[in-house]
Length: 363
Image 1 (cartoon, rainbow, N blue to C red):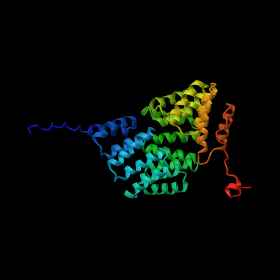
Image 2 (spheres, rainbow, N blue to C red):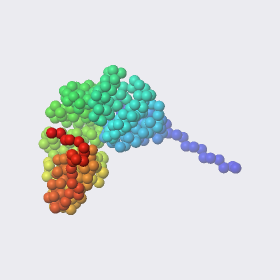
Image 3 (cartoon, rainbow, N blue to C red):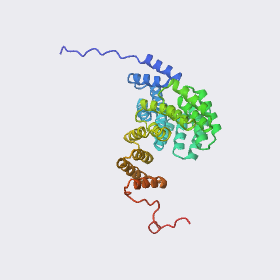
Image 4 (tube, one colour):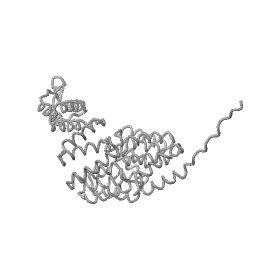
């Protein structure tokens, strides 16, 4: 009866750490801000701004699976916030789940029908779902709601470039958005890609180098600059250097593994290195049939048809199961299986026979 509970330790005040994180965010040091927000959030579990910026920071750094978890925590922090549901929509879309993203954006708009941010993210999801007309309508609503909204101007740049192929106008829109929000590197990365489309390769590199000076491990910027160095400037060695940096920061990054394999195969003639890279890509869980094809080719190139056959069959089955199988790719699988002396496991017939379908084909 005389035993008493120990006096609880004082709770650390997160105010100073949050101030440091906010300062890093404002100057565009997103990597530093992410680390500070990560350390501070346990002491500020309901701080919506910190959760939102932490999630957006992960998205901008190309750490999309982590960002989706962070977005779900943002909703937990405040499920009645339109911004929480909006950032969840963006995280879903960047994880190749645009239809779910649209649903989350609609939830945000049910809370705040005039959220230009939610409208912008929903427009981006429509664009990624190839629903061009809905993307345009939603984007128009976002810009009418707030013509100066940075997210809406960014998505307008995407729409101009990817739907209307108006590369100069898209570049100008990205540039204007980046001037208004120079601390957001994802706008800079898309600006660089727009300069690439306009064949302004050195400008693209300068933009990406600026991002990497403040955020050395930005995965999207590392991939983009590697792409420009190899495809535009013909420098596979420098491209490989940036891709290796990407993989040191994120060892299972599918995009950087995939492109490194191409650079090593076609640019550097590094057959053994490409084999190791493609095997890492398979081990990382890729489900793209073309990745299995190139992985198989890397084994065949070193005389290991047995390993190549296994990968060819796996890729072949994946392509067969696609909604619209690529006949040319299937033919390439079949030819390589034949070259290795292996029968194709299942014949491919891209169209049902007329007598089975009950329909008459086109003349």
